[in-house]
Length: 485
Ligand code: NDP
Image 1 (cartoon, protein in one colour):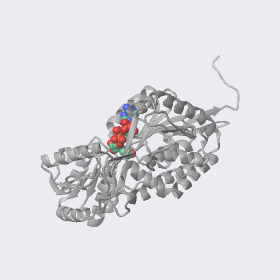
Image 2 (spheres, rainbow, N blue to C red):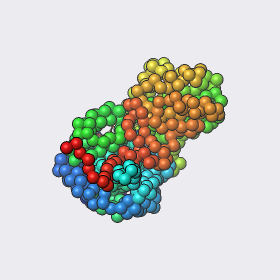
Image 3 (spheres, protein in one colour):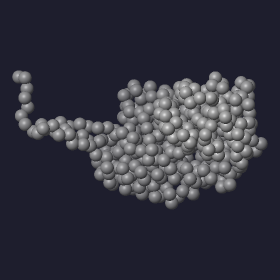
Image 4 (cartoon, rainbow, N blue to C red):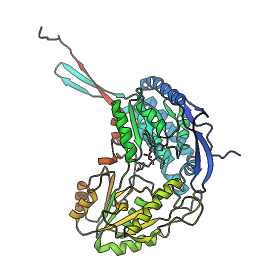
């Protein structure tokens, strides 16, 4: 019998599911069991062509609709997503292995928030009037045209919506390529948009590996590329986009610092460290994986952290009591286990976890290392798994310098009761998305994105509009034209 996760076809183009079995088969593996639950096919050149030419054509009429009309469609799509939250969350769990306890509140709901927020903004995207005596200039905020979205595997529904919603609100069309690891959820987003009244072709999904992404990014008809992925992929995609002078948004990886001062509320700080390291089994780009703890509270912090981490419930992700799921793939599990071995070899002190869980699926125990030093591999490289590194520090000046000593700059957090210090420290940290006495909140109203190697551009909030539109400026002369001859 066909598994309920199997989609009708691999791609969604011009308002309908499309198949081309000549494309390389991509197995979809359920991370909690290792069982194959679905198969899709990578896009052939013919599928890529169909998606791009359809989107290019559909964009023209979409951009001519009023913002109110476009916004209404996006908001209707948000309502449909919320109505179907349970089914979409189950699919997200099949796609990623993340526990239903999380997907019910963090994926389709976050996608719906983006559709609703940008749907609400669509009608307000205007230019300005600049008086120049009798003459004037007016500006128009125009769509970029055809946008390509490329997603990572940790938040397949959310990433499709975070890119699709602002793109469509501004009057662009999109061709979205999910990660080959999690190809299922974006198809549902495309289906829902059509149901909500989006014209065929404005949001299309094609499957495939990096080479399909490469074909999309280099196509001369494409005006903008928005990627969520790793830094090495980001560098390749940015360079390819630069060849065609295309706009880019790059949401890349991180190795973010979370700084906990002696005066912090210990339980809140432990909660922040747990949210910033173990949510989605650590597969979150903005995670605060370098937890700097001031020496005075170090042992107290570690004891409470170990105690609370022991309460994680590993198990069937479809059971709502489960609070900690598997790694997305066997490969990712092995990468993370490799980092854990490195941590042990390089002399970090294992506080808890540290091995594969004794159960089916790709589960790794939530792992905490203490006495980590700045030069250790686990303190320098993005692990993308449930491995927290706790480092000690003495002074504010010292911790800020050490926190900034990384190529990344996605996020940063500080826990302290001293508000002057909190704002001063955040002001001195090189990061795009910061938190005071909290960690990893990502509301659609707030800009999200990194500095340094963690990326360029911002998603969410009004900032995203700037990255999916451009300004045309029009000088209007009322009098005669003076010329030298
Ligand atoms: P990858 O960088 O491996 O892949 C990202 C996407 O790019 C995938 O869809 C991939 O396809 C595609 N791709 C790979 N090579 C190319 C290419 N040459 N041209 C065009 N597209 C290409 O990232 P992961 O999927 O492994 O995701 C994990 C990474 O994503 C982490 O580093 C994480 O930090 C980052 N991330 C960043 C976020 C942010 O907002 N800043 C949020 C979430 C994750 P395929 O995989 O199918 O081959």
